[in-house]
Length: 197
Image 1 (tube, rainbow, N blue to C red):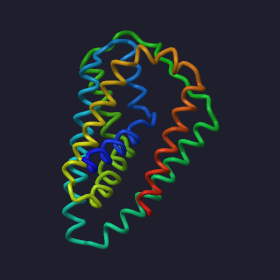
Image 2: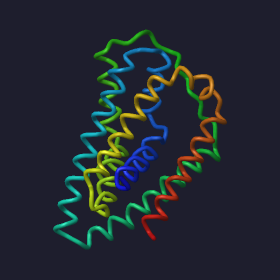
Image 3: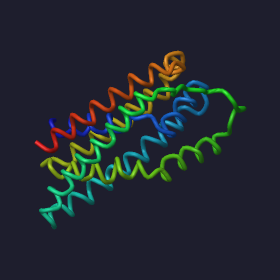
Image 4: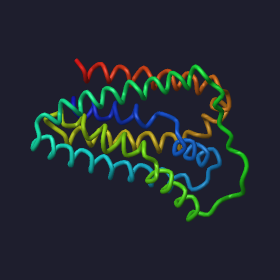
């Protein structure tokens, strides 16, 4: 259970950072346009990448024991940088959700956009394959860790997509994005400290 909860918490905090993919899911949710297909595509893509990261890094960590230490400190450094980026975004402010602008899109067009935003984003690979994969090596039950991270993806994307209507007025204000960025930064730094200690 500890490994599952750790995977869930880390997976959720990594995916919480607002990027192009999450903004697109929010936009689709606000517009009520192909929400289920959008959320499912994002969550399944994440689950596949998490599985690849955990499986690959687990086998590699057993073959090269020193790699775990290198990856732990490397992961901590990445989390510190990620957190700093979130704090900087909160300091600068100016973000706001704009869901207006285009006519109803086809399912094919929406899925094409989601797949491009997911699979061509280098941060997705850093977060799921590299970071989650390397951190999973410190847990005896890597499967539970992976399932926790995968669960976080499903919970996050479906909550974001279907809860977007409720969030629309909130995220139209730049202050909400600042609070979210501060929370993401704090979680990232807390996880980095845990990794180092």
